[in-house]
Image (cartoon, rainbow, N blue to C red):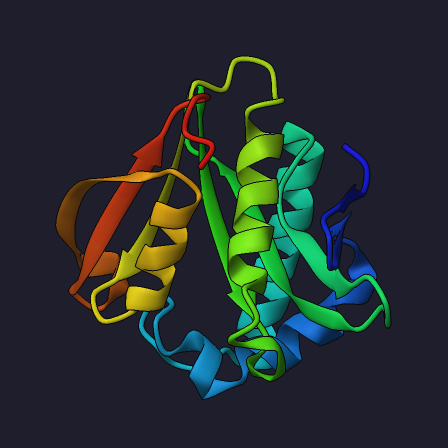
Length: 172
């Protein structure tokens, strides 16, 4: 899978050079407060996740993407596509605080959704957000996903997660 482009973003496959960007983004409390246990990632954890992402690409042929501003080339965030079983891909996104409030999360999420359904055999995408992260819930609805269930996830510090799903016809 090659580079994807949207009106304002270039989405490039995750590479070694993105580790530094990941460490900066994942150390920002504003970004990670609604991810996993809400704590900033240390260097070792970020490096482990980075290696895992690269391994996912090798295994599945897709995965995380660095979101770059099309005009400046500046790292703006992360878009993720994670294999969750036969015919299912989980979508996720993080946007750098300097780019918040511009609709980039929706643009990024829609591009990921569309790309997921171009993968052979993918019949469903899912995305989830922690209770209180209503902005992500709005993004999910904007890209045509619908609420499926809410669950307490012990792997995420016992936080309530809202799970949204969509099929190939979920384009908004």
